Image (tube, rainbow, N blue to C red; front, side, top):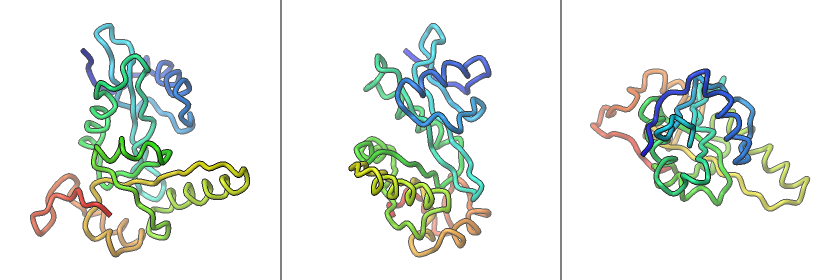
Length: 182
């Protein structure tokens, strides 16, 4: 049995410890943005956060579950609750081999670098440069979930402007609740 709740300042050390243990980038960890899963003893067993970048894009990040609690739906539950609590579209970056995990939560890979928000364009280009310089075969995926339909043919500045008035988590003028795959 577990519970998902907002993190408190007292959870900060446990969050940082779990992030390091699972090998996730520890930069940008602010306990105030986290939802955590705890067991009956209130011990941290999973976490995740949503970051807001300067370009206005929202990033699902730091999804981690302790080894003993994996494959029990905890990561998926954290993602579900973070999606419900934050605006859309929600972006993420992950190693390519993790894309099927995120696809189960409604995310799709977004490959058009020129139409990505500036933050994700920089991350994707840096990853390609890193791969070239190190000769490593690491593939970084950029994924998006619940993007408004206007994203299909728009550039990021157009989309960002449109999102200022986007009815977050609601239907558009055509009665469509967007979980569109791009």
